[in-house]
Image (cartoon, rainbow over all chains, first blue to last red):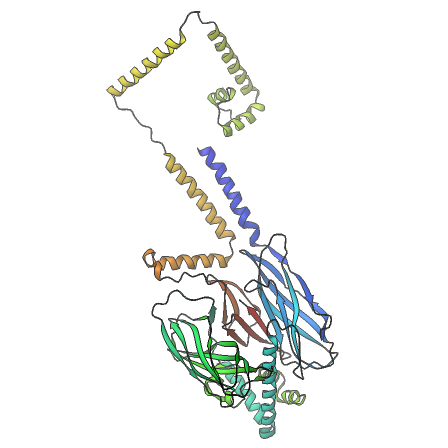
Length: 372
Length: 208
């Protein structure tokens, strides 16, 4: 018997170490492809992939994409923002990513850089080496025209960033005119202070529905009303169980004379300890005619830190897209609400200007504002 | 040099040794003149016995003789049982041997796991086992057992993809984002700022 067990153990050991051993340290070079349409308004001037690699993790490749692209504006218009798709695997959750650069001002013929550091997944398939493909999802120009397939709905995001940038530059220019350098400097310092105090809590977006519904309750939304918003949220609720909130339902009314096709709302959560944070955004595609109401349902659950017990929720309209493709965003006065100032991050443009102030001082910010 | 036992040599010469020991003895005999001569002697003895057996007197009824011998053996055994109880030599039962072999294989597999499996998989397994242990077999009905697939999580550190409680990866591992946002449609964005130029880069990950 002993003579039969020994070879059995030997075989099992070879199997076990043979199965698990080589996978552990299997880091592979990452194949890559950059694919821009021939009529794209940008062309590739150079690319650098140093540090990109694929590592076997269970049944998938964990892909680190570290890319720096040098792109040339091949169009006759100034580029305001760009979004690239980084694709490891279309159908895999976590297999798709994007890199966007807002607040650009690239004249025709000039080059600019786009850097990205992404972590994606790709299932392991026999005979297929890990690979990522970078393609163009969209480019937004200074006249708000858009080029690109827009598979990631990047036009909408880039439009919002550009409208926010114009709004905030106008605000800072007005501040400079009224309060001079000191007024602008004061606002820059206030923005830095708000940024430092802004809470950022961990939130998890969970697919599907919780099966443990013990102790679940309905909690009503409160709303921040923006007088100039084309949409007015009238009621809303979500199911709360412990540190989870799920199935938000909102009723909105279109008070504008135009058809609305997209609405995005912000969802602020306050816990029993009085901590407030922006939990998530609630985007909804719709067709909402003037003077009509619609109910928006989201089959999603948010899970917060285990110590978080949701006490109240607040919603606000963060952007609206009309049927003709034009958009609405809140103005600076509407965003001056104490809650929003505390929990909502400033626009990318404000953060860019504040960074210029940090690095080069108020004179550099003034020079930057004069460019637009 | 250590020579095999003569009993092993005798069994080897008749082809009765187990496979593993037969291989060892064959290796030894191939290089040992002394043991080869013992083997030759065993072969010769066996041949002599065969010859003697062939010369037995004519007319012996072997069937009858064998039946009588078997009957005598049985009588002897039963008589021995009447005089004293038989002493059983303690041996490991078949069940214990199988259990010992299984334990060995289990130790081997656990070692291989511990040495080689990705940490995230081990964490996910640990969390699942802890969840089961905490709930206990009598509370399984109240447990959240739905397979939720990969989830996306945002925190001050960036965007994380998770599955079964284990982290699959985090974007922009080198830098800390200035802002992260989550959409209930299953995507997350992290905003990074270049300290020198002020250029903003927004990376997005799509979990669905």
